[in-house]
Length: 282
Ligand code: KIV
Image (cartoon, rainbow, N blue to C red; front, top):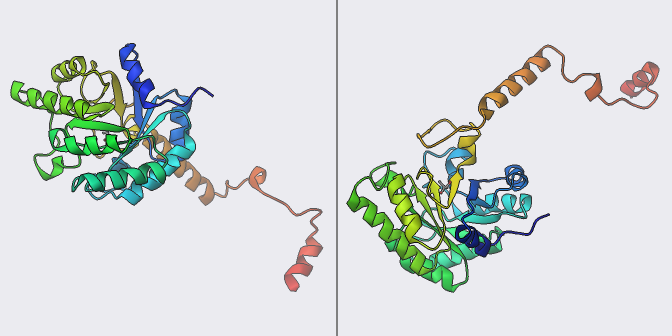
């Protein structure tokens, strides 16, 4: 097995011009498959609230739920850098909350780093986490934990003013100690500027090709979640259709008496009809 990836390696990848590949994962099996595929960074994203737990958005997700997902992922993947996504209100109230909850992610969830959303307003949180020696990933542009409360899911950085705000936010996070920053649904022009101006890696989602790495929600690229399908998603499989077909074929077989077949059936040793009659009379 290749060596475990740490935050220094992720930062070295930017310096050496190597692209960083990242996906979300919430369970043992996909975490192991992502490791086999050579993915460098796994985010145990709070998108789990939508694609696994069926919430309307990520707001209801709890720390306990995220730790359960984190445990499964860290059991399945021993190589990628695993980042735990801190859910809404697990860090917004105070630096102390942020450090205590991030500590739970590391101690109980087994993750290597945490991610929080927000720019300038999160400066002291990133500083507090860095002081506690917990690596932090920032997240600017569209911030899904609070965008449903304000103006919904919109592309960020369309105007010069807007772009300047995102660049400032990203720089503040870098100065505060973040080891990398996610840029979500940021115009490709603004994402390019940020990537050039930061020394830490930028990881884009819906932010064009110039970021140092890319992240996707696994359920989106596998075609497992179609309630919400923005322009930036590329489907690499249509697993929802495949799974539906498999479940229907199974049901059909059961109804027609084709499953279980002889090859799926266990038998008693030297079973004799007379013996079973005797047993059933007891
Ligand atoms: O929760 C998540 O999946 C995320 C990604 C969109 C970056 O935060």
